Length: 298
Image (cartoon, rainbow, N blue to C red; front, side):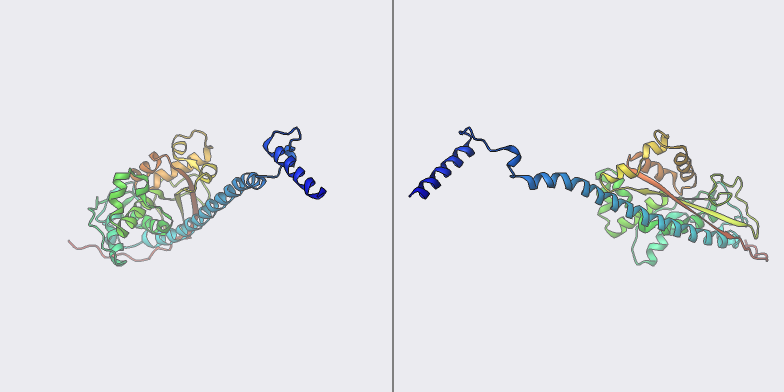
């Protein structure tokens, strides 16, 4: 009987203690309730942030490898295109890159042919017939643009929702067209004096047997939440130079100078998104052909 009374008495004391009506209150340090939730809140945010940073780093690293591959492919294209038959490049002289020139086929025409070869029925987009750097430069730049196409997001993501919905209705054609438009504006090709130099060739006239150095710059979009603010630059800061070191500002100017479409590049910068500029150089000797090409008959 004593055990029963004692048990009931202890239960009453515990009940009173839990209800707070007893002078004997449970110590806060001894209360273990909710400790799992507190530990979760302390540990999860840093681990989640680490995961996001690792994911953004992996994407940028893969894109950087793509830029290096694009530089190698572009310099191989350059040493073939520069000494090639002028007939294939609207009569543009050998080994010459002009400032601006009219051409019979620009990027839109090339993309239309490419999509046709891939079996995609693309829309007929009128070609503006303008090539920054002439027909030879357009062919060289096209090699870099196509290598960066798999790493390019759909340009429609930077447009207002109404325009974005129109491109999304096109399905696969809209996605490829949007990615190609992004790659066209975000990919830049230039010719530095030597690999690693910030100085570009004053005149893009090449001679046989000289080394040709090609630089491919790419405006990589950072889309991983939180991590993009830690690892990438604001497009407005890159354009204006606020809070960005001089080297990155110089790289941004080089990107703008060699872009295939400054208009698309300006639209990307105006979006206010986060970007990181990646670039790579590659050098090969220019082994031109030692014979004269047949002139085009009228």
